[in-house]
Amino acid sequence: MLYLLDSSDETSYMILMGQGVGLAIECWKITKIGDFKVMPAAPGSIVPYRISFEDKKVLSASEKLTQEYDALAFRLVSYAAGPILLAYAIYSLV
Image 1: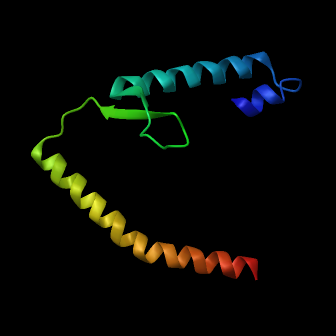
Image 2: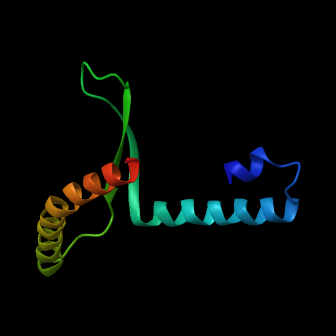
């Protein structure tokens, strides 16, 4: 949306309006699934405020267990993906 606004000389208003409506719908969807709050940051922080997100849905026991398994799987995959990504970045630079 920002790119289209920046190059608005070459962009049709129909495209801009369509993207704007789509962006508004996506923002509305996000507010339906969670609560966003702007809270003061911890003392000594560089940024004076932080955004807090709280999920509106209460998880069942099986969903909590699935969430724990997902976190474990992501951590284990990241142990392999991190070095592979670093090696590929070095390979690309060379």
